[in-house]
Image 1 (cartoon, rainbow, N blue to C red):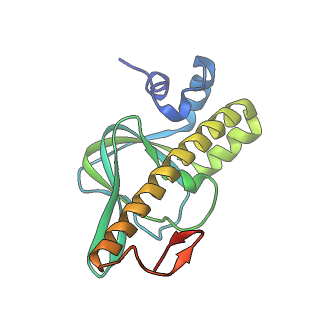
Image 2 (image 1 turned 120 degrees about the vertical axis):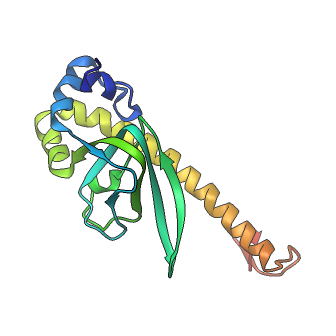
Length: 172
């Protein structure tokens, strides 16, 4: 049977950690099972932890208006989400729902801060990986935004011959 350190070694966030670091980190996380349909957190809830999917899948959605929500992404085994909760106390920016029965690992903000104090080499490696993943996610979000704007312009009959410009490009 695989240990928690074995599982964590497969998570991109921890791929720079050696076995000793993973063995130090593993007991600091808490594991919990969630049945399908569970809500892990709702948009605007307090933000205080990161979650890692060991089994199952989690859907993250954003409220648009009234009863309309849009699915932002789906997380599967080895993926993590909620990382903003490690760094600030702003409310959650989206809702996380369990799609199918799932097992998640939770890293609390307070524990993360303790890692900085007691295991700075582990914290540095995790933060480096987080920055790389933030960059990837920001690029994907930028592309989604571009596509949404392009679709909106097409849907409203935008004509590329318009006279408004912004940063040297046509704008409405």
